[in-house]
Image 1 (tube, rainbow, N blue to C red):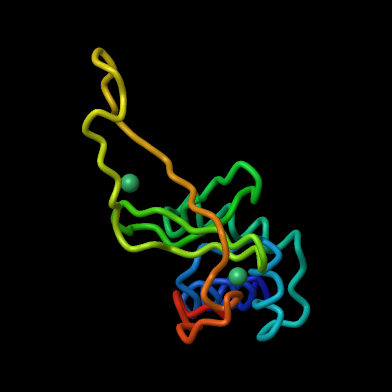
Image 2 (tube, rainbow, N blue to C red):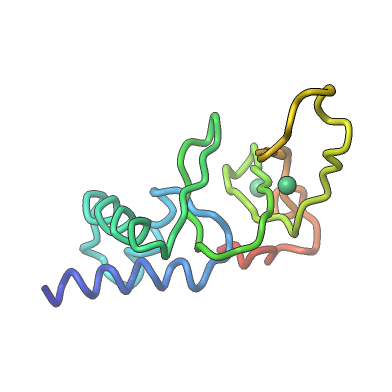
Length: 133
Ligand SMILES: [Zn+2]
Ligand SMILES: [Zn+2]
């Protein structure tokens, strides 16, 4: 029981240190820095528990798959870097929905995926965006 708690704490710590949405492999790799015995099954199980508790939410992407991020954030979008495969949280929503759908359609929700290259991959100065490790 104590071991399980340490593993869960390690996973929670990964999210506290990194604001970006994280893929399962990233969570495993970073979690192992504090709990070397952490395995993929435990990561999946813990992510399921933390999602059911409402501490995490899933972020789905058509090609990057399922990522996880802290819950309770205001509506926002994500940027996916094609080079390092990291996802970033973008501030707010700049989408103008007026006239986005023809008359007769009622827009209730939307998902926007931006992709390209992140500052770290471009070599820009801003390398700690979303505290990317
Ligand atoms: Zn990148
Ligand atoms: Zn939006």
